Length: 476
Image (tube, rainbow, N blue to C red; front, side):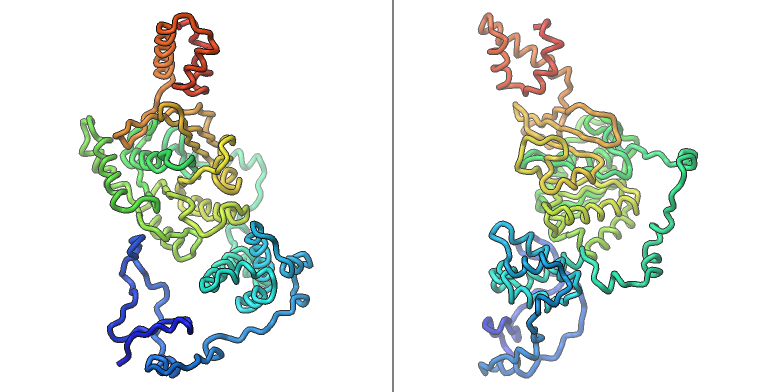
């Protein structure tokens, strides 16, 4: 009977009688996510040298038996560009190494090198400095980077594939023939029906972003519940209740449940058909609240597709975007491929997708340019929702909607003990601002317009003042 022994210098532990290992069904102590079996294989017989190590014989593990020997790579013989070879030999300074390494990995994968050969290049040349600095974590880290490169780059074998087979794999592209404008205009194309009038249609892709702690998740949950119940959202009509899937990795399950309970209780308060609305929300709104889901992972994407096929949602919310993938948000090609995944789901299942994202560091941009990461995000979306804090803890919601008429910015208010946003209509803003002006004039007597505006800006946003004052100055 074998016991337990740590053999860190050989790179592994031995677990025997009295030891424990993590098994499928266990939950991670921090994230709460369940461990799953990804590949079920037969347990191999232990090599003789491992049994000797367990017995206490401190022998050198026969590395040649467990790790394939990697030969040196002759750089000049590789079918890659000279600029890439120079990059491999000279690398880049700190701050530029990540992008340089990814460029090299893409080139080596495109040249058909195996993982072992790629690692050999990194061991031989300066481009591998960042990889070597990872120490014990370097193998897992570089394998994840090589995996990204293989997702993006076609190998020589793929490029030389039989054209007929390639055409079969891309039937949809082959069948999509050009047509005359006359035929197109005469063809009956189903109208994109609104899910939320003036805000969201079926088969659209929207992104909401803003600085941290602005209430982006609450806004998404407000919208999801409104859709599930078929009620109004921000004063805009929803024709009928919709099935909604909310995939969130932002909030722990306990707090997400607490939010749901509070929000439902608030939402139905005062309604004559409160029980009916509550039943609609609880029956039509589905959620997934764990961590570790990556939509750019084939296995995870297959699971998401099963959820869609089984639940048939009209809208899927993903919250937040940065936890949903393993790509680099600042790389254009990374984000372009990620956006392709979302658009393929929309096209395949006739659904709409709403992403909750974060704002970039700059605050002087407008519209979708506020999304953190590549500008591809703005270009790929049908709707950009930008939340910014205003005076008096109100929020400004700016909407850039591709398929709708232009909508003025919306001012939102949320009471401290509430989880729901209410629209502050212009009429209310005008009335309250006029009251503020009258009170100040009454208190100070005659006040210069410039001084009055400076005082008002402490309580009302400049945008509100510019809307109100030109038309209402005579009322003061």
